[in-house]
Length: 79
Image (cartoon, rainbow, N blue to C red; front, side, top):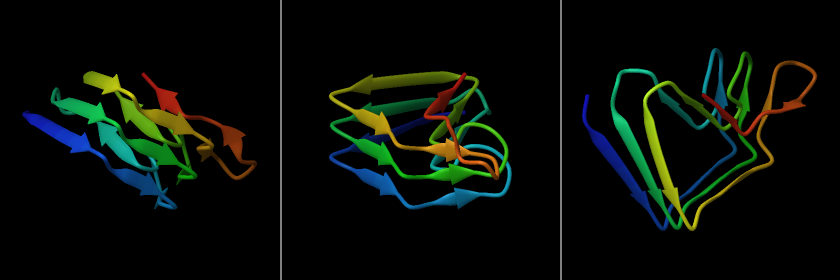
């Protein structure tokens, strides 16, 4: 576990076979998003943009347009 900081960052156009199309935080770590954009990512299971079961902090951040599953169900953040 640790902390990952994304500042002035865009994460877009990614696909995950399981969870968290852009980010998957399930190890007890911390994700800090500052002035970031997470958009247009896909997960084949859940959490199209972010799958989170730990700590997620965001400031001035856009998380939008992410989808999950074969039918493109809107799913920006799970957890």
